[in-house]
Length: 169
Image 1 (cartoon, rainbow, N blue to C red):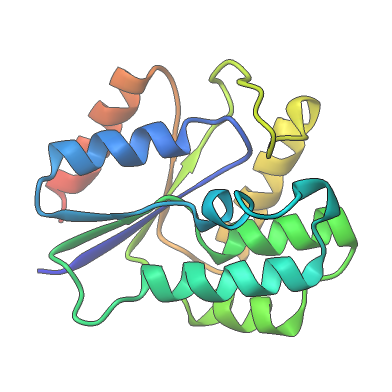
Image 2: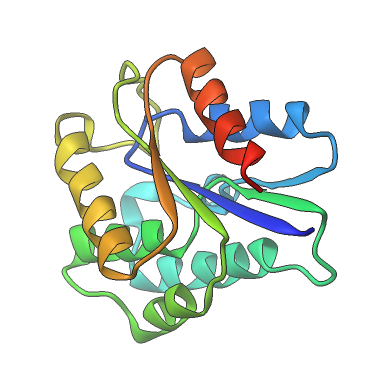
């Protein structure tokens, strides 16, 4: 059975760490990294605009929806993240991003609670708004009737939570 998992949540909430560890644990998994990190290696993040978000959304979507699909795909971010980013930073969600968000297909969303310590990095700007942003993710997942689970605690606890979810597949 082919299965797709998206990991999402506010900045510095353990998404990439969880994705990497799950990729090691499930050797048949294809882990899709957060493309924005690659995108902004060659661009100044301080000058980010909506066209940047549209461009990286297209690539992130295509990376997360390969054909043929691997046995297990784990995406370290997805379109809801880019929707929230666009709305929060620019006050609008471009229709291209909204369309991709509604087209994306994941069997399970893992919403990371921001109980990890803040780790500064050049692409992180919302240290004191993580709970606010978490609530935006939660509202969207509920309103779209997505299959999701909130993942929290230490990385070990999170892995246990995900393994219990994976037993149900």
